[in-house]
Image 1 (cartoon, rainbow, N blue to C red):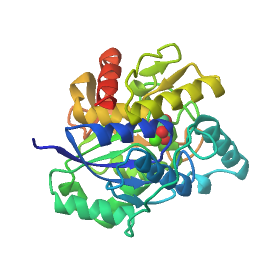
Image 2: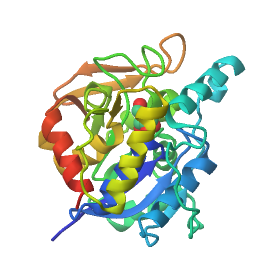
Image 3: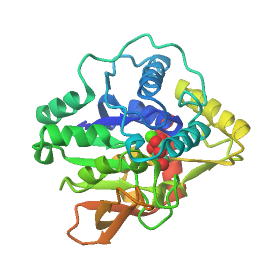
Length: 309
Ligand code: RIB
Ligand code: CA
């Protein structure tokens, strides 16, 4: 079977954990590696979380490449605003970026930078590689800047980020991944590469509810750790639902037909009160396919099916 080659660029991150397990388990995907970015936690924590998860899943053959800390828009906001941002992400993802404990990693990251790996893999597999960023777009933008020929080499980018026709989740304008590095997001969204944008328009509404305790019923290692994570989130954060932001982005590679796409031109506001807002202009020839609707029931069932493989 001809598997789809992907690189998952991730800031694990609770929902990133589910997306990584999907990518590890799916028979249809050839996960070339994980590239790590800061975002839900510091780059040190997100890297450690990825390595610990691979150790737990007994998949230490999957290479991990450390990338950039992401701007975390530290340069663009006041110290007070940045402290508020940090407390927002700690509230959502916990101090270390995960609401579940994992074993200490038995492996380390590879010794080349994530940006180098992205460029090398795209050149090695011209026209075949799909980039799946589910955190701030810093690594992807840096790779594009370093090697503009990625526009020809990369098959497509399926990204989690943005909010075109719905409010943001960090501010009323900005979604988290874009908010962390709007300049990077602008560079990626205007690159001309075929992009599928899985924004809050489809990811916020597709969530696991506290009472859906049977969503994942199996006893695989992946299902057990996810149930532990969901229980902790519901019991300790007061939240009654867990949005499947990053899992939906991996699903968009495998089953794009579960999502209604509309072509847009998308730009990002990088200053002022609407900092981090993704502005979409309908354009049938636009390079960005924005997910504007989703079959939530089928998408959740499919994600559970992949996680139980
Ligand atoms: O806004 C949701 C996104 O921000 C997800 O990727 C989540 O992991 C956080 O990074
Ligand atoms: Ca993420």
